[in-house]
Image 1 (cartoon, protein in one colour):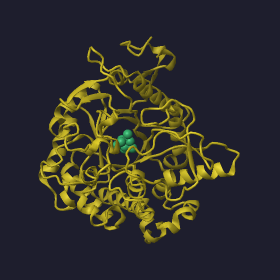
Image 2 (tube, protein in one colour):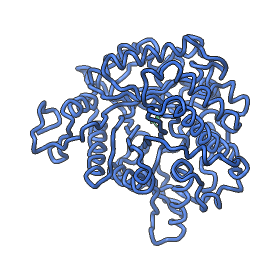
Image 3 (cartoon, protein in one colour):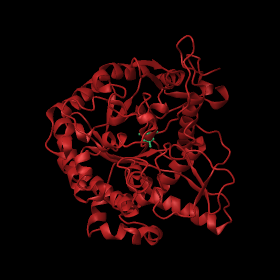
Image 4 (tube, rainbow, N blue to C red):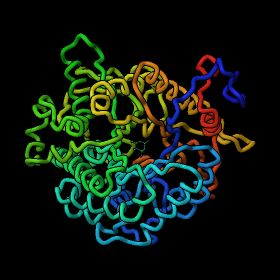
Length: 483
Ligand code: FCB
């Protein structure tokens, strides 16, 4: 049997549990376009895209996938694929331009999108913040300014005013690691600052904004399903017997995973993390009561998983991929990881230079369940996972993206492995439904299961999308041996 067989036989398939959501994801700035329409004003990504050298080919999100105008067709495509749920984000700069009063036209776009999704039988999985802070708020200090957390709560409530009658699932933030450390410390993402203290302040204030929004939304409607999405990794020592390598792995685990997981689930920052970064600015921004707010109980944790980290105190012989894409100088996003070196394992890589390690997802989900979500009774889902490859359009117009198809199926297999070993996982969202604006990589990298021709805006379902469509239709995965 191959994955192209229409009806997998019972013996060669692995079934998803009832209620498991099979979906796909995208984010406002990466697909909407209409950057200067409908009352929207600049976000930090509009401003950053204008900085010379910040984004490959000086690309920007002005047009992107023109989803703002084509959302009906895009939802029809999602329905054709059979998606159970669509994870999208709302643009703060569209809903409350400049962080000011509510813009009815901006809210209306999301209201129409939600109606379209519900009409198609697709669960709207809403994320309030996928990195596009209004530029006007950045000019008042951005996430390094504590006040932004309170503005975020107000923005969340404005959207709830408009959509609360139809949207049940609310995610506060997508990947706060990126919107703090990569953006305020490393400088590779908007707003492009390179300041260790600002990155730590941003991380804490993002957490505070998350907690304030969860409290306020819960008060509005106790029946909402509230959560957050974190990008997490397995940080492994190159040599598990080397104290230097073990310390490198501990630092990366601390400054990537635990810096967010501990405050949310345990109401504290871990002692070792505070010893590493407390004096670099973190302690200065923690106020009494903050951690109680941040640890307000949530219902769902979304994990975004792309690759693991293999670290050592010794440099690798050859540099491995995945470095900053542009010529603009950037620095390490980690506040206190000088002397930590990232190694390749020799695994296959995507064109991002990210190593492909599906079993790492099984391992990561198991750890998160054991240490965090399980004890808290919080639903665990994979809210992003995907791969960029250099797609080719065949003469017949098809996109035979064999590597992406295998990536998708093998990671779904890893989730079933996790479930088999006792880790409850409730859903999976492939990143991304469409090729789109991949941040500092511009349009150079394609993650979609649907190809976008940026000249014509034509959409074509890739082979990976067709394979996913079959998986969703049968709610089953062909066994690896049968692929
Ligand atoms: C994640 C982001 C998403 C996309 C993928 C490839 O970190 O959340 O917007 O860029 O990576």
